[in-house]
Image (cartoon, rainbow, N blue to C red; front, side, top):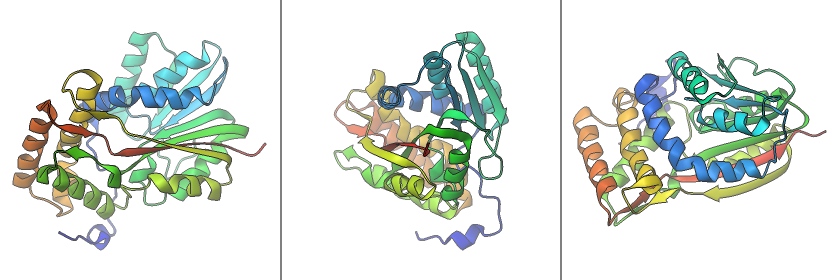
Amino acid sequence: MTVSPDRVAGAERRYMIRGGLAGRERLRVLARAMRPTTLALLDRIELVDGARCVDVGCGGGDVALELAGRVGESGHVVGVDVDEEKLALAREEAARAGRAVEYRRCDVTVDELGRDFDLAYARFLLTHLSDPAAACDRLRRAVRPGGAVVVEDIDFRGSVCHPDSAAYRRYVEIYAATARVRGGDACIGPRLPALLRAAGFEQIRVWAVQPIGYSPEGGEGDAKLVSPLTLENIADAAIGAGVADAEEIDRVTAELYRLARDPATVMGIPRIVQVAARRPA
């Protein structure tokens, strides 16, 4: 089914994945699946004690907590997001973990993020924005001269399921079409270096990673679960955009859960493009 972005012209193009507690639980699984590759990326930045960091679109605060552990008690980490319920949950989790993270509501499409951070980080944020270039400009203004920006985002063309599955292929179609109707880009990953260069960053480095699973247990199981959890959490947006109906969403989701439990199925997160860059000193 082909759907034009004009279908939602004039409507508020919100984050298409459910927020609140349901959205937080999906993010928890996603964070576990992404943790090894995200930590390896942060290792390349070599944050020092006392660094100031902002996690933009922080969701439940998983990466913000990792950053707080790296910058020490003399550092400062701010997590910003538009979802007040997720921010409240993130504050509770930070308190339980004994990590000092400041969480505040901020909409990167209209609000400034602050100034003079040593690092601005964003994961799976730009894909949802109709104007990612403007968000990259705000990231540049948020970091000090010589400061770093680190961005991770998806390229749904790199989705993998083996053996081939019609349900998985339909899930990829539903996600990409819903993102397009809502003004986003499910394949933004390869665009990231050019977006950051246009925003004035330099020393741009790029990598690609893909958490993927075979076993339904542990980290591999988390990677396999991301697909059905994601389809469940975009159901309202997909139905509202006319991309799929509730019956189809339920049918495809059930099959994705079956594939996630099947130890003979290889399935995972779409290809992730990681980019690190510096604001000119």
